[in-house]
Length: 316
Image (cartoon, rainbow, N blue to C red; front, side):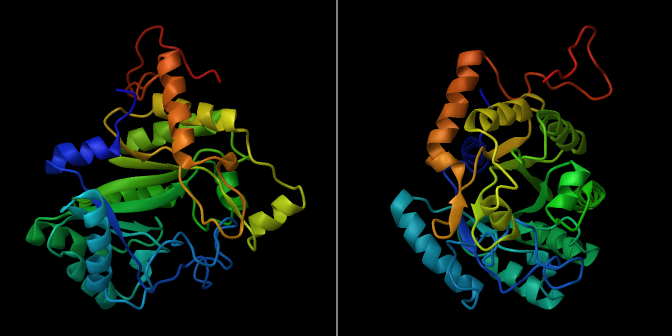
């Protein structure tokens, strides 16, 4: 096994293919409205991560109905994940958030995946989700945006939180019996391969359940886009991205599920994305390189407190 693939994990867990149904809530981000910062992350556009979503004005049940009708007929699936993807979903008012989560527990939905920031997960929300998970017999996974463990890069991208908030969030989410998924961008030009390896080691030490790898895309109309136009920032090469992803996987606990190796960006206003290639072609290149070089997830992973004699340290 090259890596612990999300699709295989879902099929093994639920006994059939499972697809995500995106749900768009009318929320924003504390890094935009002045609570922790303004302007948002330097790479984030006005639409956030929701460039293929239905209107947030539609009721949750209606969004699920429309998306399940389309995806179910296209892929022949009757089991789904309600995926709250855009912005900071736990930043909604408490009662509004609770209603949305209850409404998402619809027929055919086996899990709720809730994307948010690690500095925006109040205990009251987590306690509610833990009770909902038990009452409705449905899995709840909190997707927490870390992006990098390099504190200088976190400051540079105007992230508005540090690694400490992420560690605290994972600890508390797990304390309520909920699953965890970390979002990680492996190719920040200010990071090194050592940073990438350290990220894998931190996530392994925290025993997160899943990881979603992203590539850095650059949108027009963002601070990062302006830096790109001025020649102040240059993306890493495709070859470097492939090497960083593989190194990340090698030092990651093999039990951690990999949701994806690379992401996508909106077609409009994109100045740079995935080196002009389809995401699946890059995924295939990574897998072919791993096969060719005999590398796999967990190949250089070891317990952080027990280093086997003669075990090599990272030398990248």
